[in-house]
Length: 624
Image: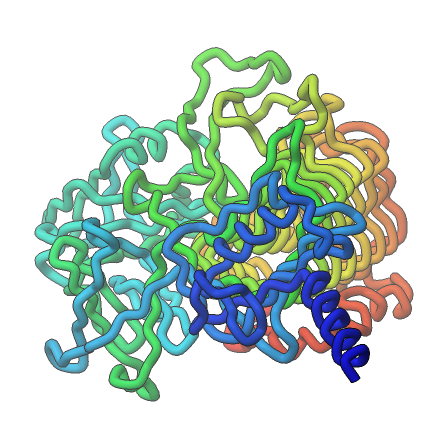
């Protein structure tokens, strides 16, 4: 009997020794052992334990480490930092995953409670301080539905500017119907211009009868009036640039709108008919990034995998601090101006220069390899969802949901260093900085770009050997998938990129100069094959109402094969392309078998139940 008991004890000891699982629960405690019965409370504590196991070569990690998150919401007080010491190996990966049948949420937000009646149907709540700092935010979610920052027009309607004076950096608009805005603190202008929007903080508002003069804060005032592309649109034929004013209490005039008084730390909200603030879950974002996975060029993070995790409630505050004037794809200009004498080192005829910055992402990855995100959810996010920024190789983004995101869903690759003029081709001495051998497949990307309308479903800059396959991109304000940067025919780091079998539809809801698939610059060996592209919205404030396309190879695009892509008409644009592009069999004649094979593959079609509703009241373009 003693022998049997001893053998059982040994078996239990061995089982414990080789169980490399660390459990986390919202009700846990970081002093706990991290077992299923005694879970830790935070991912940071679990990562530290895993890091120590690796440092000490604990035999328990032979087959890998599983950090298992039980269901519930984990409100983060800082971004989770994954570093080279957290790296796994092929035989012993680090897997961060949901417990079976659970849905853990990593939230960068804070819950707003204790609502009180204010005036009419408007309610008010105190905003908690973050440490000793007042909290500022530009997004709000009520019962998982994004609320609307108070503005002077209802729904999607906009007004038109009267004129723009580039010399004085000022703008005339029709005098607002709501009086007293000249005294409002924090008032902003949201303006539609060609293929991008801009957020401009208003410095002065002067009423002159039926017209009002606006000036703006720096640095956005100078950039907005000096840069030529895209500039405010002035046209008798199609109408001037559309705009609205936002962020003032007097503008809060319909259900679903909100206003934050930052100085007083008061939040005002007009509930929708089915919302009761005594029971509603109201979340304001605090953190701009929830996960930062960063290695170095010589010591990358490797073999870290996320499975079944939900990332929610990120913030983005640059527009409130410095304005936001993008060049393209949501990349904002740090400086930009028209050249009096055209010509740069790469393009003799180039008449402008620009230097750009990159918006933050809820999850950002740099210098990593053999990492993955599988069956995760990226929802209720202010700017970019997932961004593989620099130096990433052999990574996989597969079977995820990207929904209700203010900016781009998935972004990857270098665009331009902040110190490099953005039209110069990227060709670094050490090509390990280039994102390569990345697979983006079977993701559903829906209702993204809903705040910065000039962003994208999937956006790739200077990348090589990247495959974007069998994704569905749906309900976006601008282009579905974009690959390339630089506007140059010069050979650069880009090559062998493949855009294969994607389904892109119901796009261009707000912005034109647009396509389902868009490319820039020379990319030898690259392909656009077997995609399905359909249903381009009639954007009500487009600068040129006919400037919409299914496929669009823009400046410098070269060495691309474009074939067997289905769309309802042959409405394509090849603008200032480079050499050796091959176009073959694109349009409505493409075989039904190719059309039907595009989009999510069979094991991932369950994601389709998450699709955002189509805007049936907005017409679809028909091309004859």
